[in-house]
Structures are given as structure tokens and as C-alpha cells.
Image (cartoon, rainbow, N blue to C red; front, side, top):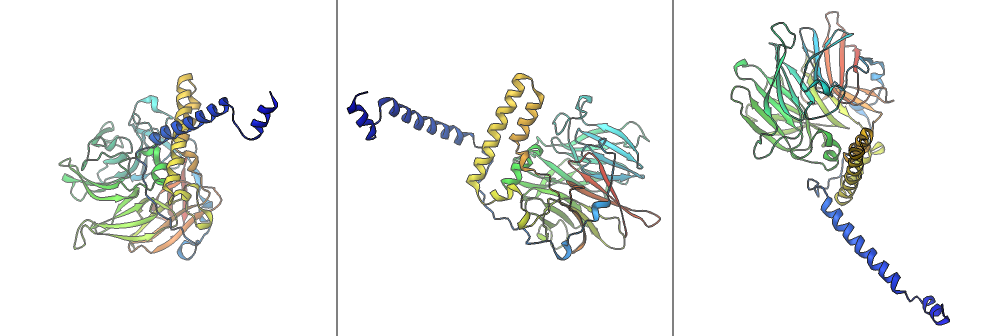
Length: 435
């Protein structure tokens, strides 16, 4: 290279090749940006909302470690018993792999019926297999469950006393209601005062995101959730409440004039009136330090009380990873899209080369499961009909977590037993309380 050329380069003059590289970088960056923009999930919103986390756990939410004495039963034999219902002394629950299971005593399990083929055993949240979540049983022994991926299902002859158990779908989620199909049914309650026309109320968690997409549903603060009312005699389905942020648990009050609803993402309990002078109105019953899951009437008859399972109770000092993005919609879109693209790529490679583990890892990343941290603190509360907290039961050390429901029973000898269901754990929690 000549002295002149060296001086020219020293003074910052670029060679034609370096200019070409720079132009290519600009073009590739622009193309990448355009492709990324068109890869953003259309379901993601520009919603921005600052989370109102509790400053601390105090008052009725004061911490303890009362759940440390929970016994874990049927470990590794009961996958994801999300909800429980009793009939003739036995308990019934739905599992991750699409079965309705009978729990007899403390040491016996049996499959009542499978919603999918035998090949579903051990699989999780597959549409062809089904995923029964909320479970209810009427006084006559008819079992109703919401299959998160398929619809409302009725199972008859659950105890086998009058024939083989049979299931049928009453409401298919592919059938639109008010122009939108259900994507993620979560819980239900049955009003069977009139056996000729049972009314079933269901929480439709989202019309956009399914059960496998619960994390982006929460992160995006989706508010497409609804409460559906189904008439068994007519088959009619109607929306009685909408624009809810992940409606989860649901329960009827003793007077049957109102529904208690857990609004998961908003971390609060609602009371929606379905009869009487307040019909059609909704009020906030209680703000919570975490996301409410199932709500169930307690076994007490001296007072009207309810058990509520709380997911991931936390304060401002113990926030979760996805809390950070609640008021940052642009950053949220970028993060979710990156996870979706990376996860999809890994999943596709796994399918191409036949690596099942790679497919599973890709699916986990694509649905942002790394954000769904196993939170060490867990909480269940008992409230009265006015929303006053009677007691709080915590596990602060991770001994038991991911609690989705509390189902209690008062024995003849006065013992008060609570059973703790879970959408994630492979066991049932059992605890004896003082009444």
C-alpha cells in the first residue's frame, strides 16, 4: 500500500468493500426489523397497567407456616388434581392427562373414565386427550367438568352403581358465543335447584389464549375473559359478564342470587348479582396479595364461608419476573415475541430430527414457561360472605406450592380436614385443622 493510500485510510476514508459491508448491515438490520415486526403475535395488546402489589403481609394476611403440616398423598400417582368434588364418601378429580379419577379413602385410586384414548396416559394438556379442570357433582351423582381445551362435559354413573360411566359434551368451545369462541374454560358451578333445567355457570378465562399460553395471557393482562351461563334443558349459552382479566374460580352464594368470581390477573374477588334488586351489577369483594384460583363453599354450617386458593402471594419486595412488564407494552411485546420465535425454532428442529425432549423444551420456551416460576410462598384463605378474611394459611418454605383449590370436610368426631388440589403437583395435600 502506498504512503498516500495509508494517509487516506488514516484520515478515515473507507475502502469500497467496507462501505459495501456497512450498507449490507443496514439492509439486513432493516429486513430483520421488518420480519420481527410481522412476527409479533397479533393477540398482544398495548395495554399498560401498573400492578398494585401489597406493601407487606399484615393484618388478616399475616404470615405463618400452617401448611407445613400438610400430608402429601398419592405422590407420583395423581397428576395435577386441580379440582375436587365429593359423592357418597369418595372424592373425584380431573388429571393432566385427561382422566376423571376416584379417590377412595387415603390409599386407593381408580380411573372412572378417560376423556381421550389410552395413549394419552402421562401426557399433559393435549386437546385430543382433554384437560378437566373444575369439577362439580350434583346430589344425584352427575359429574360436570370443564375441559379447558374442549368444553363442558357431563359424566353419569360415576360410581358404577347403575352402569358403566359415560361422558358427553354439552357445550363445545368451538361454538361461538356472541361472536367469540371459548379458548380456555377454567371452572364451573352448577345450580341444580331444578333437575329438569340445571344451570351451569362457567369461567371462560380467555377468548384469545389457551391453557398452554397462560403466561402470555397473564403478562399481557388480557381482559377477554367472560362468565358463561349454560342451560342444560335448552343447550343455550349466553355471556352474562365480560371484559374480565382471567376469570378463574367461581361459586354460588347460599342465597343463589350472586356469583363469587376470582379475577386472576387483577388479583381480586368479584361479586356479580344474577338475581334480586342488584341483578346485573358487579362489586369488588376483596383485593388480594396474589392471584385467586378456585373458590369453594366451606363445609361449615354455622356460618357462610368460602375457601380461596391464592397463587403466588407476594409484595412489592418479592415481585415476579412478569410483573415488571405490566406497564411496558413495547418491551413486553419484544420479550414475548423473542421467546415465541426462539421456542418455535427449537421445537421445529426437534420435530425435524425426532428429538422429543427438544420439542418439549421448545414448547416450554415458546409459551414462556420460564417466567412461571415455582414460587416458594403459597396461601389459602377462608372468607365470610362479606369478604372478610377469617384465616390465612401459608407455606413459606416451598414445602407445598401451586395450590388451586381447597375442599374441606368436617368429620363426625369434629375433625376438620382440608384437601388441597393443584394444577401442577402430582399429589394431593391433606391437612387436619382445628375448627
